[in-house]
Amino acid sequence: MCLIVFAWRPDHPQPLLLAANRDEFYARPSWPLREWDDAPGLFAGRDLQAGGTWLGMSADGRFAALTNIRDPGQEPGQRSRGELPVAFLRGQATPQAYLAQLAARAGDYGGFNLLLGDARQLWYYNSREGEPRPLAEGLYGLSNASLDSPWPKLQRAKATLENCLDAPDSQRLLALLADTTQPPEHLLPDTGVGPAVERLLATAFIASANYGTRASTALLLNADDSWELVERSFGPQGRPLGEVAVRR
Image (cartoon, rainbow, N blue to C red; front, side, top):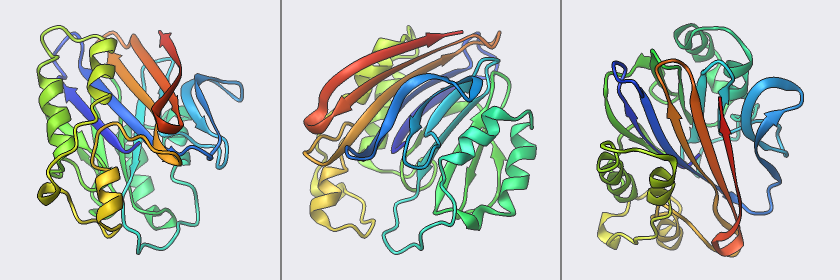
């Protein structure tokens, strides 16, 4: 993923509301959201190049999502970051135990952020910061830096999500992900990719000939561990490719 905004409300009948965009090169092969044949009970899109995922759910309400840390100077990881959500969803470890074990080998991967949880707890780990932590109730945003880094598209998406909390549904969450508002250039972060690429990446929804938003996903997780996951897929220039919904 490259943009995640979420509301964590642990004492609410609907503890987690989340909207996320996966940005990637269109040429990189992937499957849309589905139950995996080789992992029954795991529901996610799949990166067919490395075999992992960017966001997924288990049938019993476990959740995982990943973003990369943008740093063109970092060394490539020895392992694919996409395996991290999969390993959590396929296992039975608590988020705390899983992240404690992962922290010892985080250097095997390129920089990443990882969200893990269920209807009762939500944990966050940034591989550069190195300290897993549970999240308190609140409204959060995550892109390709740290949690709540003040990137314009992140702040705008968080504000829109806050306006959805009175009557949330998957379509409202997906609508906020379609925002193509270009922020003023002086507000753009400097992540080392150059001004032209910073501008391309500055919108919530990215569209170009070669790289852009491949999937927009809305998640609504209920206190009884039931959930709804809806994903829209896109091709070059933002061309819609379809929508998949899974409810458990």
